[in-house]
Image 1 (cartoon, helix red, strand yellow):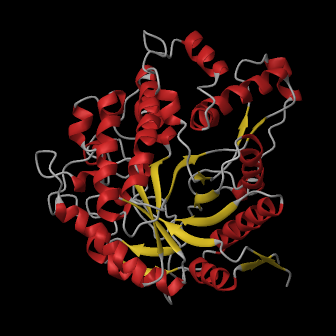
Image 2 (cartoon, rainbow, N blue to C red):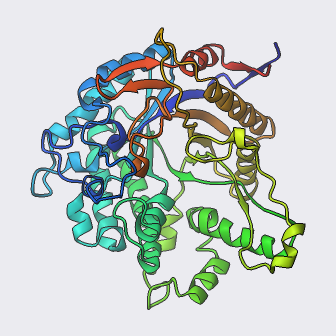
Length: 457
């Protein structure tokens, strides 16, 4: 069979986040997070569940590292739970929380697995939310202090750092759409939050570099390949706006381009900005946000085919939305479109020139479970990953400096507002017994990692 070989130093890994897998939400000095609070709002989570136990990774991390070792993974991306780093009732460093991650890092390194640490993956301490959350500049300052504590403690061993995971979700999903914690629906709050998240990134990068000499630092954005539903002017305009809302509002300031002027104008016309306009941006902020980084993390799941909502009815028949057939949608309701990954990576390389790129998340939710013999034949996930690996290889061949791929996720887990209704893992988790079973996709991925190549047939 034809084989596509990846570069010799290409990193193959998997990814998780603290609230989604750890459990133990009331142990060893951990304080309440915004997700602990949000999960208890009636109707906030689809199945009414919480992350109180999740995958019990807090107690089973050695078992989970052994799974990674068995699969031959080169790297593991995980997040630190900010609420574990605060002592009960105050701001003192909670060494019991820090020690968990220190032991985890040591175990990873003993097994030749490179740790990639994400500092913020959405579990803000509730005490900070009570003081304004990300709408407050003070939360950004607190995040920089948190980054100092963690990087000082782990920086001698961790050499790859991600400041934030998906600022769009933190700000827009959490403060405007309301589907994520803290569950607000307030446009001005969302835009101020986005700025303070990016600002805290800018403050954190030099702190991490000081505490962890020789390390590489970046940020992970959820991004979409965006295209209009038709060649019409209305659809093209809607596409421009969506791209600014989802992609450019974060990409542009991170790469020294200020916030996109077209989107500032759009938000002003729509009444989305705070009463003082962009007054949350202070002198020097944009320079801080545009601090040089070593890589950009890309979380890719699907594309956006954008259709204008205000085109007259008599034009509808001329406008075709080209999407995958119904059979090519995941259980999350996301279209399977691997070509979009290559198109997105090529665009990022062409327009923003990050020195290095990682796919920090890519994967699919399918509900295949164990058969009578305990085998989980998740062929759809295997095909999904194969096709996205092929797209990544195509981007590398086009000159994109892609250096690694982290499959989401190592194991089934708490999927935020969808609770336990979605299974993204290459490892099955029985939530009643906490038994882990590698799916066939995991064994296939194991062979890809071992060979450093994939078959195209």
